[in-house]
Image (spheres, rainbow, N blue to C red):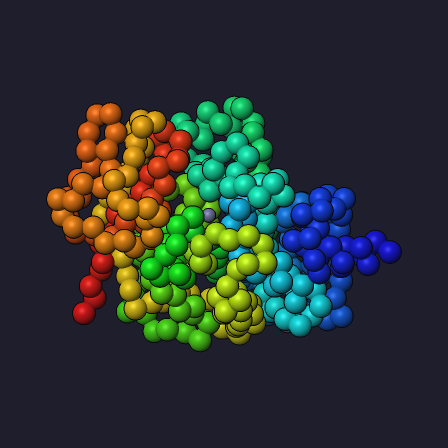
Amino acid sequence: MFAYHLNQTFSCYLQAIQLNSPWLNVQGEVVLVDSSRIKQLAPGIIYYQPSRLCEHNDSAVILSCGLHGDETAPIEILSLFLRELVSAKIKCIRPCVIIFANILAIQRGVRFIETNLNRLFALDNREHTYQTSFESVGNYETKRANLIKQQIEFLLKDKNSLIHLDLHASIQRSRYPLFAVMPYIEKTKARPEPSVANVISSVSLKVDAIIYSSQASNTFSYYTANKYAANAATVEVGSIRKFGENDDKLRNKLINHLQKLVVCRASRLSSDIIYSANYFKTSDVVVKDFNDFQFVLAKPIENFTAIKKGQVFAFDQVKQYIASQDGFICFANEEVEVGERALVIFEKMDFM
Ligand SMILES: [Zn+2]
C-alpha cells in the first residue's frame, strides 16, 4: 500500500504539490522492475538510483525546477519526466536528482514567499551579507536552500562527472524563447570555461542563445558549477504562463532532450551540454538603488531588446542610466527589491 501511494505521488508530482498531498512529506522509495529505485528524500527532492550493476554510478544528473514558484513550464516538464521514470518508460542509466525547489511558492503560484530562492546559493567561503541577514531570520527560502544543499552534498560528493540543468521560465517574453545562462566559474576552480569550439555531442541541447555570466551570482547553477565542478546551466524555457498554457513544442523538446541525456552511455558526461548559434556575455549589471527606479523603454521589455550606445534606458531620483556601448537588455524588472539586479546588458560574442 505504501509503495502504491508513493508510486502514485511520483506519477503526478505536480498535482501532489498543488493538492499539498501528505505523501510529499514521506521519506520512502519505490523499487522498479530492473531494481533501480526512486526515493523521496524530502518534499520536492527525489533521487533516482540505478541498479547496483550500473556502470555509470560515478556520474550524475541534477534536474531542478521551481526555484521560482510561478515558472510553470519547467515544473510541468520535470513532473512529466518523473512520471516516465517511475513507469520505466525512461531507463535512466545514472543517478539522477530531481528537485522541485520552492514547494510553497509553487502552491501559491508566486515567484517566492519571502525572498528570491535563486539568490541563496552562495559558496560556503564567500561572505554574502544579503544571504546572512536572511539566514538569521530563517525564512522559508533559506530553509529550502539549506535543505537542497545538504541533500546534494550527501549524494554527489563522490561523483566525478556531473551535469546540472536548472530550468526556469522568463518573466519577460524573449526574442530567443529557449536560452541558457552559463554561470561564472571562479578563477580558483580547476575547471576551465567551456569552449564554444568543442565538438557537439549527441546529448547536447540546442538553444536559441547562450549567455556567459561574467560575475558570481549565487544562483543554484553557479553553486553546483563551482562547488562540484558540475557542467551547469540555467535554462530559460519560454516565458511565464499559467499551468496548462505552456508551449507544447518547447516542453516536448526539453523532455526528449532530458531522456537522451540520462541514457547517454558516455563514461564521462561531456562538458558541451548546450550549444547555440548565438553567444552573449555580460557587459553591465544594473542594480536598483532607489525605490523610484524606472525604465524609459516601451514595455514590456522583451529579453534581448537591442540598445544603442548613449541611449537612456532608465532613471531614478539621482541619475539617468545611459548605455555605455551597444548591447542587448535582458531580465528587465523594475519591481525587484532595492539592492537587487534590475536588468543585465549583454554584448554579442563573435567567434568567427
Ligand atoms: Zn526563474
